[in-house]
Picture (tube, rainbow, N blue to C red):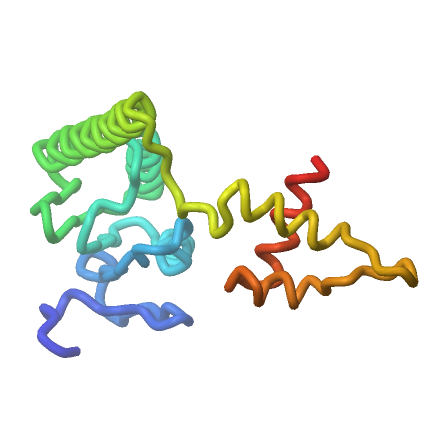
Length: 185
């Protein structure tokens, strides 16, 4: 299979078992970056058995708690974990220690990024900055739009349609409706 060492196979959705002895059989799972739950990991964990190696390209968890739960689950099933990018092999004591250290560092790094992001947002708010897109209508325009909407003709019907008001200000009808709702709230 395309440059993989002979002891590694890439499972398909059916995750077929290799005919190799259990000691050399392993799985290669690529976690999906956008998916919080990795279905192929779940499948590999489900079909793994004593003596297997689970081979992954990167650490899978975002928290030390998740990594330790995964490690404990694999240890219970007597399945070794090999992480290619970090050179971790939990079949050895040094590999297990390295796995735990890298997990702790990854969690620390994630916590630092979250803290820095919060600090940056707080600093921006202190300078009067707010996130998000600027309003399409100024408060004055919203007031005029509301007045146009409320204006009734001699027959008791609205003089201006929402589409006409939207066209007047160069925005969409949903934008006008949002601003009309804010006026009534």
